[in-house]
Image (cartoon, rainbow, N blue to C red; front, side, top):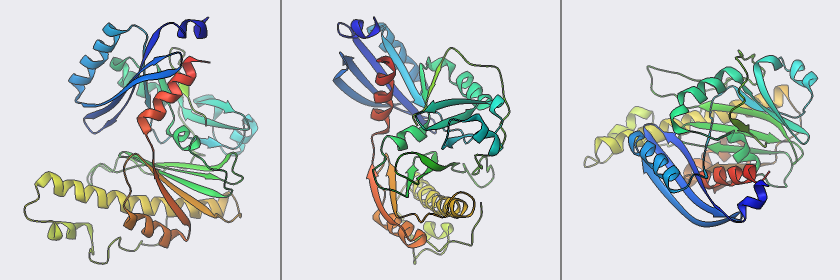
Length: 318
């Protein structure tokens, strides 16, 4: 019946995620699974709440979707609970979704917190960012995928081109004083909470030597202040520093993941690498990644909001 109704009515899909205090949003009007229009926006919170309400007033068939970037999530190359126990993951404290011959998990405690914190946005679907990587995978074997976002970095390694063998997520540190997050091994136990039945979690899916400077002319992050043009605003300088800092953290995290993969997961040699991002990645940084990881890397921009809406549409058509 749901599919039959969709032939005759329009649906509004709203995908969003937060970057600091900013909400980046994509609105699509859908009819019979075809996109009639697409609009992109940026809002503050007050504007975003008004926008959501206006969408519901315009069309009651409105569906809100986003991604959850908590670090207590990951992929396992099996759907077997025995495999989870072997990895030391407490299956009583996580939500697992089996997807063909592999699965994805997330801590119930963090999922519960995420839903409570975002309740006012009337979210219908929550997707794992691992899925955004998975749906962009190639047919190449023994490949590493690096998804770089404003808030986090994901590493997903496919050993056979079919299912992931290794996964890890890193959230960028907010500042030097509040190092709120760090990379977490997927085998860590996760505290649990009550089951969540009123929202869909849909997922289709340690340390190294000091790294080299990203720029021969920059001896430290502090030096960026010295080379920034005097006419630049303080906001632009902060963004430059943040970008350089995130690149350094990303490089160290990726190298740690590769080291962890070879030591604890597989002896198969990684042959290919793909860098995915919603923003254009500088050729200089991609070259640095190549030089440090000895991988043949290709970079690609992806439409994160568009992919989130695509996933929501698939759920509506299930």
